[in-house]
Amino acid sequence: MSFVKFLASKVFFKQLGLAIVAIIVLCFIILKWLDITTNNGEFIVVPDLKGKSIETVKIELKDLDLDFKLQDSANYNPSYPKYAVIEQNPVAGAEVKENRKIYLITNPSGYRKVEVPNILKRTFRQAKPQLQALEFKLGSITYIDNIGKDVVLGMKHNGKTLKPGTQLPLTSTIDLVLGNGKR
Image 1 (tube, rainbow, N blue to C red):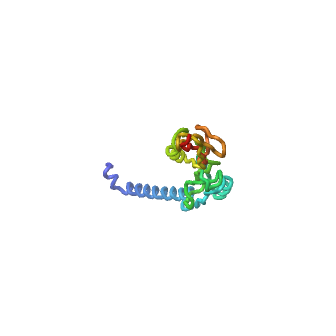
Image 2 (spheres, rainbow, N blue to C red; image 1 turned 45 degrees about the vertical axis):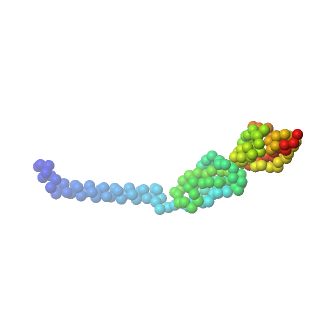
Image 3 (tube, rainbow, N blue to C red; image 1 turned 120 degrees about the vertical axis):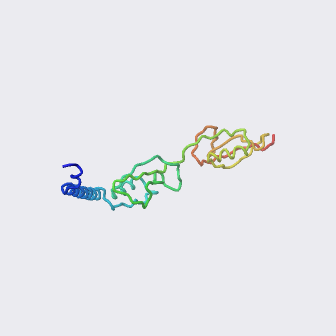
């Protein structure tokens, strides 16, 4: 029997039909198995975790069969408590599968510390933007007798004299001592 005659025979079409049926049944079984093992169509809605402590988040996510991973802390945000969640990924309301990790960014305990720049013997006009660029706040301004008008002669924080290079938390208030232009 030649190969061409075999391709036109009943035996070939019977075997081809059986192979097609076997492939269809195998695909159907695999798809059903995947539906069952991956919980197809079953989702958990991610809760809003912003502003909650890590202990509360741990309990809440454990009840929902979700996991979490802490990422690095962000910049301090005074509108949230210390060590509270300020960002989450996936966001609240998203649908996820069970055992999914929720990535959390927490609020640090306070502002990071910044070095006080050397603004001594500079004019107030030069010193003010330099301090504001570093997110320091300007407090009271006092004048003393000095020939340099509006020249920064000293810096204070909470009544204590500051030296350039001192580390202060962001948004700290710095009081300035300036010259009044008189001898």
